[in-house]
Length: 195
Image 1 (cartoon, rainbow, N blue to C red):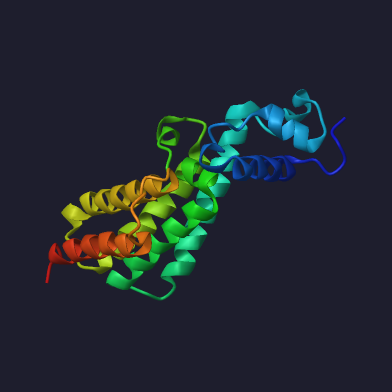
Image 2 (spheres, one colour):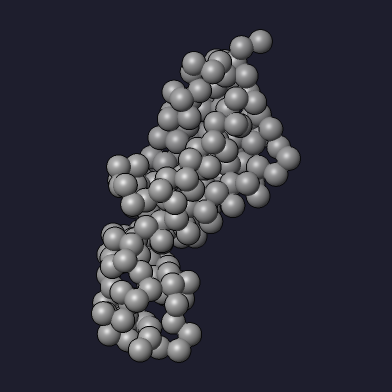
């Protein structure tokens, strides 16, 4: 019999806590044993609520992506064009620094090939659509928007991962460097705009 109060949502919340406590590798290191330990149950008890570790990872990824997207929506607010992209870049970095383990699964690509991950794919598509909308508002031609989304995501993600890994050891202000990167990206995308 499952522990009182233990259901799918509670198991996912416990898994998110494990991921959060694990730092940048929290998602990679997620195990059913760690979640069961937090729940005070044996591992087999979790199978009543999630489809094993793959199912739990999908739930954690979906929840993390939805949370990430919510932070982007809040950052963008009513902003458009360059200000929207800057706000979304800042929100990406803030999310990654606050939730490095969740950020790891937000940026994962294995979900695109997983036939059981439709909910994760839908959540991820919403995130990409949000960024694509901000890029479209700059006036980037439709045939260049995928390139622009990829370039923006790759550059911001690369900076964030390097920062999380301690890759910026020089004494110069990392915030200034991030603003420099984002300004360069936004400026480059503005030059692609169709007027």
